[in-house]
Amino acid sequence: MIWKTKLRTFDLSRRGLIMGVVNVTTDSFSDGGRFIDVDAAVTHARTLVADGAEIIDVGGESTRPGAEPVSEEEELRRVLPVIEALAGDPNFVVSIDTMKADVARAAVEAGAAIVNDVTGLRDPAMREVVRRSGAGAIAMHMQGEPRTMQRAPQYEDVCREIREFFRQVLDACLRCAIDPMCLAFDPGIGFGKTVAHNLALIRNLDSMRVADRPLMLGVSRKSFLGKVIGEDSMEAREWPTTALTSYGRAHGAQIFRVHAARPNAQALRMTEAFLQAEAG
Image 1 (cartoon, rainbow, N blue to C red):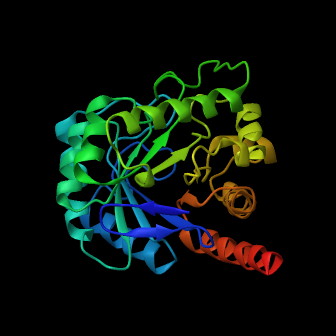
Image 2: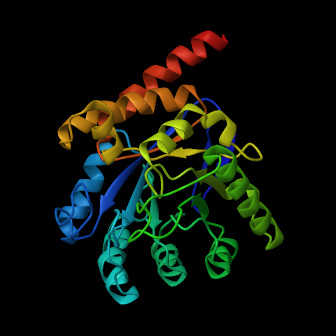
């Protein structure tokens, strides 16, 4: 399984990837405000890499439930200095987490290799950025928008509907001549889903794949974990996150978007050791 990005091609057939989160925001649910300073964000990114991340996902607009949008100008002001400071390091690639095509374009020009779009590449302008730049792209499913997505989300069959969404996105990308090897997909755990929807998607990860493209799993510190274990602190959500990295790798995911790289990288490598021993 090959995944092409603008600067590096990953072979994910035997080895998955940790994507470390760097929120250059004031209101992200987990660490809003901690890394709004450029130096703090860059230092945190390099710590994540030292702990095992091979992708750094830089975002300047929170997508937590209820989040208010920020202007394009403000988002660019937040993310571009961080991307420019990180770009060019051979030990990792930078991803831009944005819903805005112009932000994605500027980020790729500044050195980002991947566009991580929570709106699923539905905007033709975003698809054009991916096509013209040759960036890797992650298309995530979200029902609604961040401000409203958790207001009674409903599906007839959540797995079937998201799989069909992925097929539609893939078809749209192929029609505009995006290289399919640049694409990855994310079921969007917690983005317009109930706890039951989230659990159903995780249980059926293998069935989510389209055209042998990689799957990303982003469960890190999300509120449904606290609801499942009955303890809602951020600290309490760390171990369930790590457990789901191991489970996800064994059940069809290749990319794991997390806040704490070291425990998840260790869980990933340990799980892969078992998978390869079994295959051998």
